[in-house]
Length: 377
Ligand code: MG
View 1: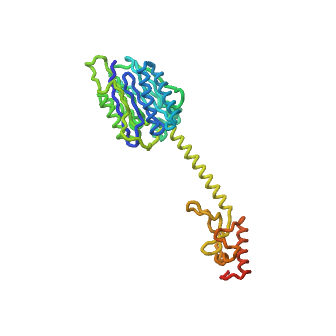
View 2: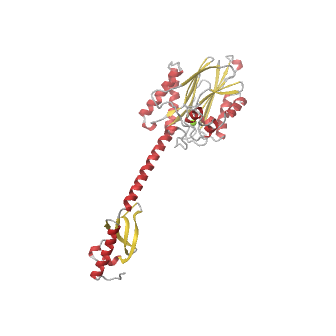
View 3: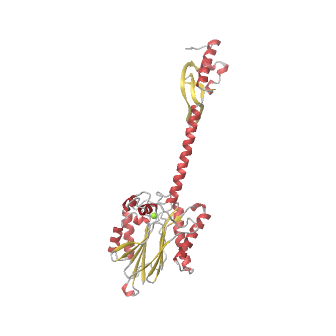
């Protein structure tokens, strides 16, 4: 059986980098969708596929060994390099051996078999929403619309070993095998994918059309497709696609930048925990500060008069930590003319409201007794 392979990738319309990668290295083919920030995601998906390719070229013939090797490489890099800690990737890979195809799968990228006009999903999404569909909590339609549909329950490179879904199938001439990331299946239906595969016999054209359709449907994620067309060994019966047998990587259409939409579980969960914890700390601080300030009293000056304040006589970055509770009619200048109240403007602290009232009364009495100038109420 001959394989004619084609691949296409696109950054989509929202993301600022392409964290998807693909591998076309006949007879080894794969797609990977990285996670863990734009740097980590890109490193994880690229490293996983490069590792598989290298191991295969060095004689590793079992797909399971290639996937475990890729997992180790990504995990070890994330342990050594702090800039990519926590990264991981999906991986959907096939190894073609004659008319047998071995399949290895982790995450929510997918493999489909297109045969006789029918499209069949070969993989199971390792996502939270898929688990909920299986357990009957939500329907397929609800899952497709769920904003958390990208939360993965399994990803390559986050632990020392990985539980891989493996499968094997026999292929027939004219079969098409589609590997794709969720940027395709999240944007267009299986029905639309089937229509495009039906209408575009050339694999390179079909791959391009699939990616374009997902991009036009919104392109909220990176979109990557690898399409394998199986044909008989008779070269007269099948045309070779340009680029077959060469290894190609995901194109980087845009310079790396901050992710505008993080679709994966790990970074979002970490961010949510940190944001939540930070908000809690700020609330505790604000409530504590408010309770403390409400228990503080002092006598000072407001609008040229002796006044009772709640709080402390200070400001922090332009915010006063006090407010006037009572403004008396005693002129501040008259009080400050007495040595005892010279520093009135700086505030005379009181134990409580009663103590503050007593201080005001004392000021009033002292002014009266010393016969200080100025009007008194
Ligand atoms: Mg994706």
